[in-house]
Length: 118
Image (cartoon, rainbow, N blue to C red; front, top):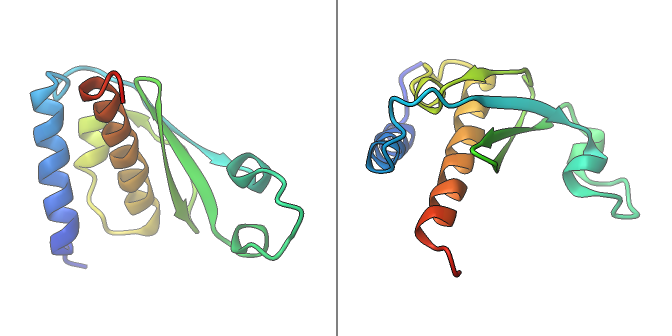
């Protein structure tokens, strides 16, 4: 499956951001874990949310203390550098979810870096 243009652009910008922050080649641990529905959205008092009924689960990546999340029907762990996660081939739902979760975590971390008083 060819990579969609949006993923290509996101990958390029995220890798450029890591380079700008001087973290592109750093050995940064990125871990994903499957969140239970209660951990993901709390106890909303209703059980009609897709996360409670469906096959999808929410995974969470941690990049330098910043969390990033993504939904997937193929949850699984990943440990490696942010660069290696962002360079994964996006040929299945597991890899796409890791990519999105790590992308979100990197963006959140960068926001904290650039916007200390926001």
